[in-house]
Length: 299
Image (tube, rainbow, N blue to C red):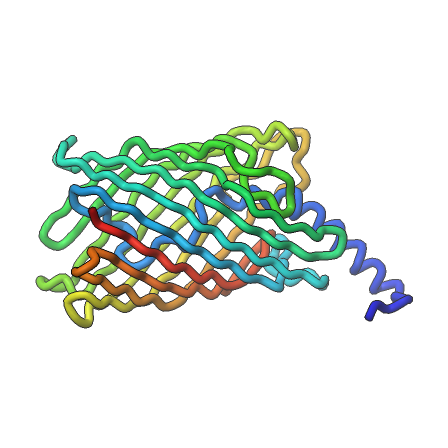
């Protein structure tokens, strides 16, 4: 049921909320190409030489939209997103500087449903494809290290607020590692950092600011094939958007934490991991919940 009148203060608050929403909706595609939260326990470790196929299933729920200071905007807002991404990974036996050379590609299908005053939209379409032609990984007795370079191609559907692509090319550099606290490697602390450098979105005449994504985990192996732990992520826009179409100089950010369980089935050579991240803070973007189911098949 809709009310037929508003107080003066209510009208001002509503106008401000719609103005903020329009700005955020126009910028919503610029929260980083990388879908934060898809990697979890030991996320800084690349696998040994071999051929792998990963299937990411990411669910995002939110009923809160925040302003640039992290305060909730007082409007009716709901957002749901689902991404299914297939990622073949090939780690070769070739070595460069002592590290194993590898490559991978990520092909996502994305569904988005956004509901807010003046912005109601839903879309299911292909997302931006990620190509990573260079990865190097090292494995020592008590630590792993990995680096990589890749790029995002603007193959996704672009029409905010329910766009499935960013509408712009982007570079992404990766650095990750895992340290094992005991000789049996049952305790692990891991971190994975990705930095994105964006090109101009010609439709909006905006060059999105660069984005830093950091994922971390602390895990314990309970049995040979079972891991549990705590995971989290932080995504931060590090530079302002630029260009004549820029609507705001705010730098969006989000912080989350939650649990994860991972199981390996030797018979099927299949890893299954399930993690939940609760977003404890967000600025200039929605604040919600992320659930990720990841399947990794070894060939």
